[in-house]
Length: 331
Ligand SMILES: [Mn+2]
Image (tube, rainbow, N blue to C red):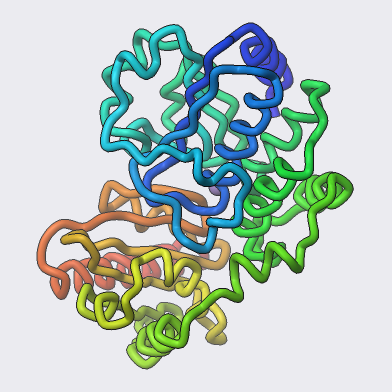
C-alpha cells in the first residue's frame, strides 16, 4: 500500500464537496460494497455524492445499505462530473467502467482504488495494491487511516466485498491482512452469517437446477488438468435468471482433484463470456489476455466474439495450449 497516495486521497476526500463514485460493469460484491460504503461516507461527511454504474445491481445485493440510491446509467456525461471528484472502485480499466468515462477523464479530478494487478492506472491518483485480497480491504484501511472510522452500514458493504472476493476466506488471495480487515468490520457490527444468508443462501429451485445443468456438462481436457462447463442463453431464459445467478459456479470445477484450469462459458445478451479460474502456478490472466480480457492471477475473464460453439472451442484450445506450455516450462 502506497501511504503517500493514500494520504493524498484522504486530502482530496476532505477538500472535495462533490463526489461521483463509479462501479464496474456487471457489478460484483466488491465493487458494490466499495461504492456504497464510500457513498455512505460521503453522506455523513455532508458531500454532494452520487454512486453510478452501467449495469443494475444483482438482486442478491439488494440488502446493501443505500442500494436504492445506486444510479444505473448508460453513460457518464460532462455535466455529471463538473467540479466533481471522480472515484472509480475495483475497476481495472476505463473501458470496464461507464461508457463516456475515457472522454471525461481529462477534465475531472479522479481517483482509482483497486487491487487488480493489470490495472491501467487511468486516473490522476491511483491507489492500486495487488496484494489486497479485495478493493474493500483498501477502502477499510482508507476509512481507518482517514480518521473517519467505520459505521455499521459501511461495514456491511465492505464485509460483503471482502468475503465475496475471498470466496468466504478460502481463496489463495486470503491473507492475515484480509482477516485483520474482517475483524475491524466485525467490530463495527457486521454479522457474517446474516450477510452469507443474503449473498449465498438465496437461490430459487430453478437457479439450483441451472447450476446442476452446468455440472452435467462438465468436460475434462488436458489429461484431467483442465475442466469446463457452459450455459447458453436459452438455459438462462428457462431458469428465469441472469448471469449473476451463476456467479462463483466456475469455482466448483476446481473442486475436482487434479484440475488446475477451470473454464465457464456463458452466452447472454448476445455476448460470449468466459470465466477462468486456476490453481498456482497456472495464471488465469495469461489465458484471458489472449482474448483481450484480464483480471487477477487466479481469477480472470474475457468476452469472445462470434458463435458460441466456436468461441467455446477456441477458449478450450487456448487453455490446452497454455497448460502444455506452462507444464513444459515448470519441468
Ligand atoms: Mn475486487
